[in-house]
Image (cartoon, rainbow over all chains, first blue to last red; front, side, top):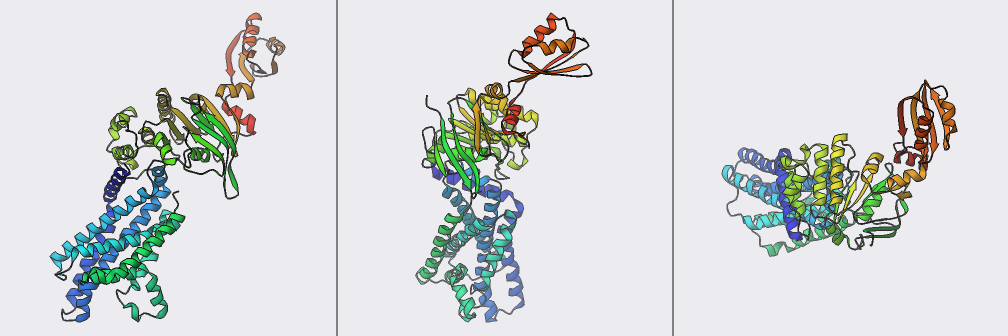
Length: 250
Length: 305
């Protein structure tokens, strides 16, 4: 019964999302474009023998692009939730037998499905124009990205709970999420950060997402990253519990 | 028969603001019951407490024998709701919304297509919500409120912002809901709407119910005054009018008389006086008080202020 509602709502939300050309392009198109453009520029300028360049192109760039996918999915969620709240759409849905958690779960599903689609597009585009590593465990990597996105989405709900109006949702979300990339260990190893940033990095979920994504991309076994998955799960549980307390429906 | 809705001594505060205070009333099966009052009087808060969307601080509510707080999902399965100023997703199509809503209820939904037909939305079934007119949006919300064939329908400020023509069309739809044996609970700040649509109304102001009854009984109780405006050139008219029992004031400007008095017999008496004295009139109008006047009388100010 409720599954039917969940499925219908998820499907309708996907269709609505794709009907909004700008939103769909921003969320799906931008990460793929960043991946292609940066890949071309860096790949073309530096000699293939350069170790740093090669490492960045083969591991750093796909992980960066994947993080962008996850973050733009989360920002889109924050915006949609704020708009729906402001327009009374959440309230209207709540006045049906739909459980509140079903309504929010549908949005999580939409974002996870779109994340997977964007990743697939990125891989396809990369394969054609820009040969990345050949033996990448794509299935595991997809799972790793979905776990990371799921975890960051819970932060998105927290942001959506706090942000007062839809106008500020996207910028505030961006201000909170994008700087996390800087200390996530993607560009500078976490160990070489100053102590304060080091501590910060250790409590931010993106750090664990990067560790997990890099590891899986490099062919590590899942058993080597159970700690990262656990950290992401903790973030999810904590943020979900917090947003359950502070989430506003109107 | 047990009332469909029983509200007893409900109080709801937001911070230090008392939105609803000691509100009690009952709604019977098959009637259109209106909660009327100015904006901010507590209409929506009261309605949303009954729908299970808000929890009152004090008091008890029972709808169809259910507690809207503890049995909210069972209740929502059996009621239909239209919220004030609600929106749907901008780019959701009409048929998609109806289809989604139909899938949410335990009870077998009534056929969406037939509902769209009844509400005159068939042409719009593939239109996006954002491209509908105000009246079409409200008709869609009525469709969503009726999709589960509910026993009680809640309509909050249904016709606010609509032009008179759409408003009349919506009133006909609401009467149609009652004819199908449903109970309708609505709020409005339009006195004309309440007067034309509601079997009974409760007047609410500052979170308190002032009086509850049939519209015409409220008028009779609180505004027994009758006014007749007529034009005549007869020089003895004024004197005769003053002699009529029940007449309290007669004023005259440019041969146009305004006669005020009280009691249902005033008009009859006046007509009798005209014919007996063969007073020739060129115009005759009665001005009856309405709910608007009742509200003014009870609160000391107009509902629009």
